[in-house]
Every structure is written in structure tokens, then in C-alpha cells.
Length: 116
Image 1 (cartoon, helix red, strand yellow):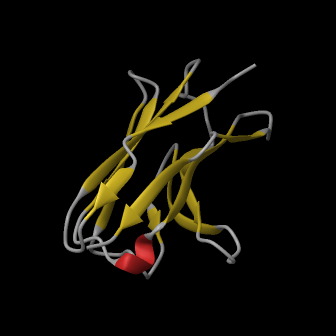
Image 2: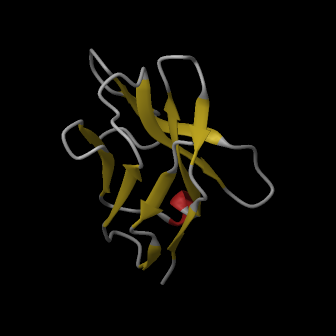
């Protein structure tokens, strides 16, 4: 069973940066897409960004220009660089992927807290 493992969450001050990484337990070369969702307390889970096997990344308007997504098929990872973080970015961030057989995968989540 394919697993997704996230690393890189933590506490950062407003304006700071964090990098989240998600590693898959098998090759992601043929995955339809990989990306990140987040869920803040009392809110629904929302798409942050995803990158398909072909084409450009899709990035939520709320993070456009601040978050950058990259995918490394050779290392089976997807990484999200988050700059100029704001308190409203505080949430649990979940790695997400879709396999060639249309199975949706989720990581266990990593907490990102933006606070002074």
C-alpha cells in the first residue's frame, strides 16, 4: 500500500518561510497529480496547490505568489516552499496524490502555525 509521509511543518513568525516535503513509498512517475491541501480549525479542507504529471501547477489564489510547488519523480517527492507566511496560513497541511488507477492518497498531516 502506497504511503505518503510529510515533513517540514512547524512554528514560524509572520513573514517567515517553511518548506514542506512529501515522500511516497513507491514511484510517483505515473501519478496523475500530487499536491497539498490544508485544513484550519473549524474550516473545511481546501486545496492549496497541486502539480499534474504533465502541465503547470494549480495554485490557490490565497497563496499565489507566495507558495511554490515542485515535483521530483526521481526522488518520489513533492515539495512546497512557503514564503511570506501569514497567520491565516495556520492549518494542518496534507499531502495528496492520485494514482493511475484513480486511487486518492492522503498523508497523515503536518501542522503549520504562523504566529508572533
